[in-house]
Length: 299
Image (tube, rainbow, N blue to C red; front, side, top):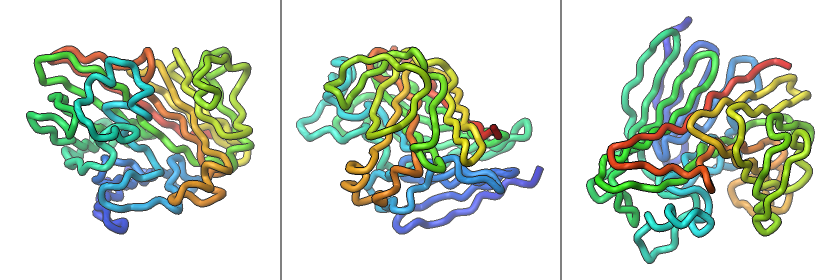
């Protein structure tokens, strides 16, 4: 296997790293420890790098794998214990506080034929703005035959902490109308577009319109089957019993200034998560790791 190559690049205002190992290439922004793209030689991208994404300091990036933490989505839709962690009169930003912060690049090294890259979010004794809790955050990435992402929260404070979180992964697809998601048949889900009512999945998921669903008690393995590209993207989650599946479809995409009007056709989000009754309760001194391994396999 060839020697790993790590080079610094700049995308508009953001410092990034391009990392090559074996047949894989990874692009990661320092802001948010945000994986922007992941691709294997000779194949279409696996992680979707939005052509219209904006790379500005302090602005969240609509692409790749945003880290949503210490809450997911609209804070007011989170369980009361997660809402109680926020101490501020300012509006709570969607998807938490860490997507627009600079993380520190930690150790880079190889073990057992894989490349390991670590990012650390420095947290002061006072925690994050409006979130005064001493929780350290580390994102570990491993490249071997797959892409492995692990987000570890360690509570070094003296009080317990409640968090919701997600690895908000945008997957590249040939056309979202022609793919299907396997592994969801029979699962209950919250239909956020229908007043957050509970529904039950019948068969595989085919995206036929705007989709924003929170799947509950999910299995460890979910897959995106893409017949046009003759591949299966297989997701294996750890530390998670919930997943969010999202596609903005036509009208929502048209309203985004940082997505092409037809961008919705080329992506599907399956977000490995801890949300709703799957939130994380971190006792003093405890740690929790949310992870997903992503494999691209031929059909």
